[in-house]
Image (cartoon, rainbow, N blue to C red; front, top):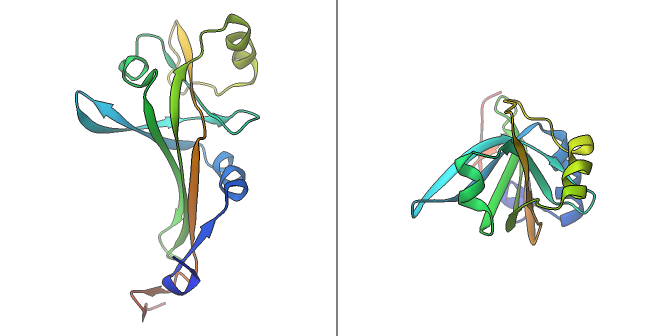
Length: 146
């Protein structure tokens, strides 16, 4: 798509720049052979990996550790009909290294729902894509009322 379609594709760097500007994204994964989507707070690691902190007993941990997942975050202005969306796809892994876990306790995301035993999940950014809604005053080529 291009700007004439109302969207502008974002390159990888722009996608990774926008992700940390919002507090919540969504993990898309498979749960009991069905698609599942879970909103989570997150942060990015230095290499662009998405980091999520959750309870070690969370169903999410067993569902995505070792699986390929998608992560999506966006910022939408419904009144202005504008915004952006970024999708990161890659392998999710539980951080098992004690030194890495200790580092993430200091620098990683803070849980919005703290638990006694927390772990970190890492989604490697193998495929990163995004788009920007531009010229948001039109829909299907028809001017929208102000």
